[in-house]
Image (cartoon, rainbow, N blue to C red; front, side):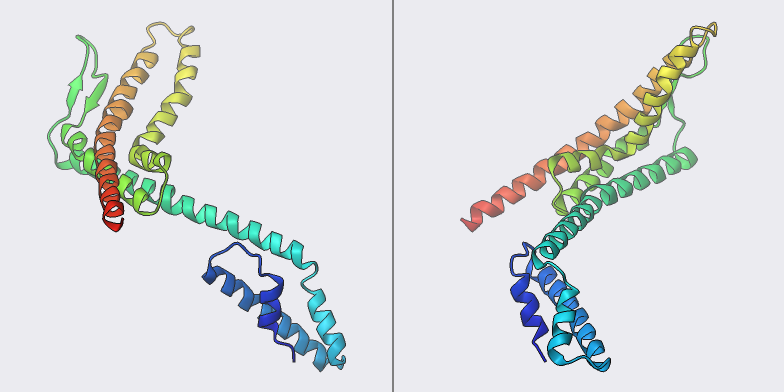
Amino acid sequence: MPDWQKLVRQQLSGLALDSTEREEIHTELAAHLEETYEALLREGLPESSAIQRALSQAGDWQDLRRRIQTARTKENIMNDRVRQLWLPGFLTFLLSACLLALNQIFGPKPWALMKVGQLPMVLFFIPWLLSLPVVGAMGAFLSHRAGGSRRAVLTSTVFPVLPFLASIVVVFPVSLIFDRFISHNTAPISLVMALLGWVLAPGVALLAGGLAAQFLLSRRLDSRRSESH
């Protein structure tokens, strides 16, 4: 019986993957070829014919190598994106939302920015804003630890305000259109104030913590590199 592991290693020797992934692919493919070979022998085929039929399952080895390389590269990119961006961003958003809910239930009344004779246009939850630098630092740390780029670290830091920003960007043009037909329409100015209260102010607080964390992490990494030299 042929050594399927050795054969697969020779044919797929050019795979640009780490040793663990490469060994996993070699083992899986060798096991598949061996199962096919043994099944063909049970059907009564001669050994040489069974080997040829089993090898034909792989087809063009160069094409197979290219397809495996492409599939694994895309898979690794998606896994990195989840670890470096989506997971830190989601955790940052969840923590921010929980702190805001706790502030609304147990915290002091929010500070209202209003115009004389009108309802409050925007509310500032001061304890929540003061806690956001820690939230931003957490998002930056998680993304940085997962090997995220500066853009991924920055996005993870300000992730909690992105849904609010997206909502305002979508609604604002609509309010401008309807402002022509509705007298005394306060929607545009309300959206501008919401941008201040729910995007700009918390965004600055998140960035303060995220940039500080990124600076400290970069300093620590530089010091380790200098010590290694």
